[in-house]
Length: 171
Length: 343
Ligand SMILES: Nc1nc2c(ncn2[C@@H]2O[C@H](COP(=O)(O)OP(=O)(O)OP(=O)(O)O)[C@@H](O)[C@H]2O)c(=O)[nH]1
Ligand SMILES: [Mg+2]
Image 1 (cartoon, each protein chain N blue to C red):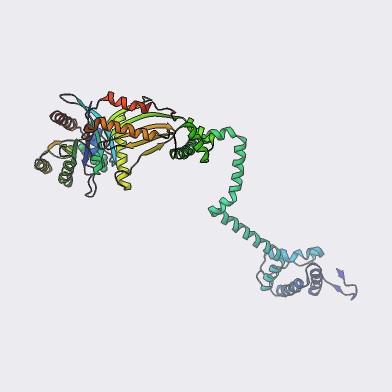
Image 2: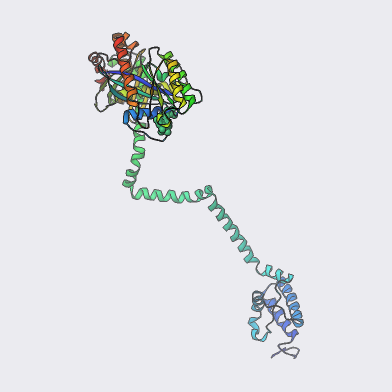
């Protein structure tokens, strides 16, 4: 089976671990337990062609301007850049992560996740802003809530499909 | 009525002069001279006072004064109280009670010392440890089996590990000696003997038990699993193990410093060991139990170069597409089959 290394990055407490747990175990917890180092899980996603195993690396979040341990990103082909829609700085910081990921692997398949959607009213200004940022970075944006589960499965499946498509295009 | 024989005078009991005489006799006989001098002065004063006014009654001191008079004729003496705090009285008390005072002082000192010992943990330990040590010694002697049962889970594994380590050291020492020289059996034994390794030790080295349990071929940069071969068949998440091994290595290298070449190449846990050999694109991690043969790591490196030669370009840009599992299995099976093989 084809396997792909996928990293979850973003500032601390944006909900990387929560998205990971929602996707893999279909569970959510209000408690915040910061990730130290990295957690790993495998999930098989069905794609149009064949099934692919995503090896998900849930990496500890950047704190105080520091970003990610670069060696964790090494040879990853896919990444989810997560922000917390309620915290403006985490939205703005997505740019740094995207640039870093493309530096590590110019062909990196990236999906942006605007998380904690459940905490915002639909017409909130941050929603307009996050769309602008995504457009500027020229990356796909999905709005998610690890709490309600909205958008989570779709986001990972979309990423899986893109990874397989990419594999087909450049054998 | 008492008659004074020499003078022929008759004294009434109430007579002051009579009382003084009796007391003098009494005191001189009972207490030493210095004491009685004082006592006499005191009594003289008391009697003088008592004639003028009735002194306040005090049981303690009264009893003291009376104690000396009882033997004569206590009923005959007037019940007169003695003032409590006259300086003479205090002095008297001091003299009479001197031995008791000394004793009390001594006891107080002892109590203070005991109290201090009880308060200070160190001192208490000092006192108690011989007692506790003794009682533990007795307990161990009386219920040896229970003790062994209780302690085994705690120290059993550390003993095993220590023995393992000692044997591994022995093995490494012998291997190092051998490495300096020739291969053929006889020559090897001779060489070892010349180097001061005794023949029993050398034979022991050759029969040390050893098994390979798992082999992981891992893409070095991504941590993705390229191939897994198992002698146990118990591992279900080999791809996560390979990822975590890679992440741990990066973590150690990044946080403890050092360059690309310096990182974990061995992890010991319990009686097992993970030995890691790194190639340019892939690394080989082997879980083994026991003491590995001297040339085992060398053989790992050899297999790695064969794999690199075979899959070179695929490994360099590896993204997760499966490699030919049959070929990989063929290349790794010899390592898995390694058992007690030294020649
Ligand atoms: N309401 C709501 N809370 C969320 C959501 N996602 C995460 N949280 C909460 O946000 C907090 C942080 O979530 P984590 O998933 O631990 O964040 P993280 O990005 O993994 O953090 P680090 O590991 O420290 O980098 C937790 O208290 C979660 O319960 C969401 O979609 N909605
Ligand atoms: Mg986390």
